[in-house]
Image (cartoon, rainbow, N blue to C red; front, side, top):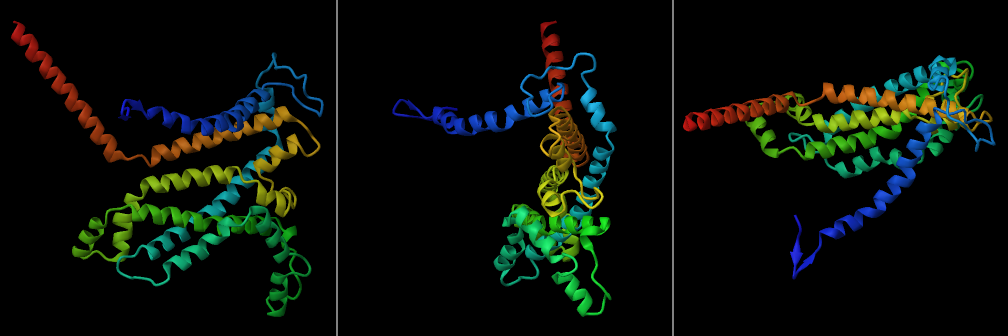
Length: 330
């Protein structure tokens, strides 16, 4: 709908304002994505890789090489494992803090201060956090080892960065500590968008805080929870900066993630661009697949059933109207 004032159309300015975003998206997002997808079907490798050719005999050879690569399999397992280890406590703590901050029965003083404190780790760059934790868990001298030895919990220092499970747990904790505040803010914003009348009605009916949270808050947060799951899935499966800076995939490739694997294939001396591109597209397909499952599982069944009933009613109305017209013609 065009808005006119004194014969001047202002709707075109909306298109003008969107041009910078469209241009930036085409140059920095769409073009690299399409170019990466095409490289997966070529023999592009090496520093002088300008003259590459598309594969003709077996166009999916690069994808098959990546899937059969043991390092890629291990990196995929590590990525999923570390993501699960950080996301479960992340969403749990974020939901508990959301219930605490949005409680209608218990008013808490200084909510704004605590929100800022919990969100603050998210504004620190991931590389800085990784370097900080590497220093905290350093061997043989480091704050954590000093505490363990001085308190008598251990006789000697523990080599955290040389233990596969300890390294995974530390990276998972860094991911959790960095992102739980952001998840909490998103969930709190979703709760604030729920009508207060619903909570007042529940309070009048005698519902306690736990019942209100699980019977009212969680069902009305389905869309926000879906957004949180999708963004966490995308971010978790693309985990790169913290594993790369913390231990560069070590020890024994226990913290090697798919993004670090792709970087190593393309830039860390290998320059196998076609295989790195194929691995990127495989990860893209995995993310799309699991995102589709989440959308399907968390779909609004009541809305779908209502839409089906509306469509059925419209069909019956059209059928009845057609029948009435035919009967009038006869």
